[in-house]
Length: 603
Image (cartoon, rainbow, N blue to C red; front, side, top):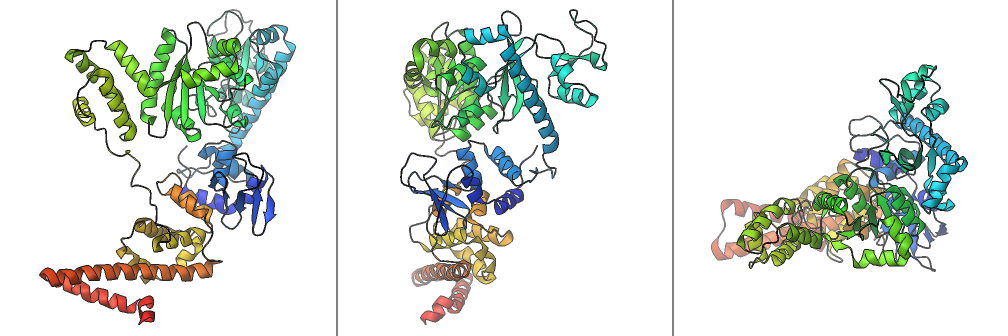
């Protein structure tokens, strides 16, 4: 669908009222020009969570949580960024455009989602009225509360029940077909009598199956998974790819996990729907499952948007080990410092559903902590089993096999540590750099793609003051004198590049609030330091004062830069003389210093 344009994010933040967004989810109390509450992100009795309508920004002085209206939706409602944008836009009656210029087809999608919700209610009612289906649910140990929470239902043993109830018109049949709920047949199944209606060419996809609704991040039903009762193939049948559903991106149970309100620091990826539901029933609410596919890079990107740790749980049999190996290969590109990827192998013949029922929540969670192997240890174990020889030939074969795997890991600290661990395991008596050379892999000294190190302007420095003023009063930037802004190019202080970029951006594309600035810097290296700076108290009371202070701060920075360069040139002149260009530069710097207001005032 394309990326969401920055101009729309600007408009969205400009239109949104953070007091309404936060206040609709927690109780806010007015305190002067701001609002306060007990923080929703950590337990406290005395309010330390403050929301500023002027900045359109929130900050907790207890746990440090802070951000914009979009950040709050992401953290509180546990939404990925695009879905938080959709949620905020929907609350304001806005369509979300994409880079192509076309809005997302929300009206058509909304009609399809309404149809999915109606069919889910029909399946749920069918479960309540079918003894055989209810007995199956009872045998699997699922209680009424968990069945209702996950919306579990039953598709009747009929070729056309959904078609008959929901496909009365050509348009409704088109929608059902688009959602993958009915299938157009080339010829009728042998067991099916020839229908008389005009819908004869269709039949229901799901028949005599326990139905598991699959929800997106906002809780809307976008697909179904169906498990056969008793014997039959396939054991699990999922909705096909549709306009609503992309199985390589979605995770079953993720919505329910977000809604659990438990402290979420990791996700547990299991293989089956009932595994997820059963674990949630035992209050292990971090469980999710992929949907008939291996864990994809897109799955992992979504996971690491939410949590820093993921544990994959697999059966200890051959199929489970094969699935674990595929998961490891897909996880390698996301293996970065600050993230933890682990693998848990269950006892032979057990799956999460049966094991948690047998040993209980506490014992199962102890397994997650004690038995789950870090990615590096799992990789070492697998390579050792595949290449048991420890001589030169064995090490060479191991190095050749592991090379394409390590190449997938981004350069940086994690890759360096992984190479060191492999070197230790395979007996390479060389330095990590030497091992990397042997493998033909640069292990790197910094993380690729991270860009320059985030700017941390010095406490009380002029650059910090200027950045802070721009952040708190971004509308002051367009009023600055052109000559002053241009002269900032000479400043070489730490953080000067960020200052110049802020000035250029805010003069070319003015922003009205702190929140708009922060959203422009989201996911950039300097975004986090800017957000922390936004939580600080404003240096001046209003825009006019900010404009005056900015002019003064920039002039002093320019003065310092000019004096520093002039001193270096004069020192060089005394030591070895100057070129004609350098003499001209001395004259230019002298003129600039004479015309700076701060210098003139001092004189």
